Image (cartoon, rainbow, N blue to C red):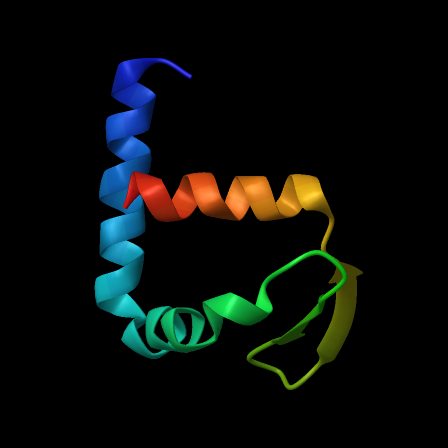
Length: 73
């Protein structure tokens, strides 16, 4: 990734944190649970009320990606 794109990503992550402080706080409080074997579930509810859910089991590679994102901030 080029340096300009990295700067933009950092800026976007900062803005996301400002707009969604509860999400950031949730991950800060529970980061120790984000390790290999943990299951992360995501639910999306549309403005019309439709809901979809998926989940994923974290791998060692996912742990490394999350560590890199944490260090980026």
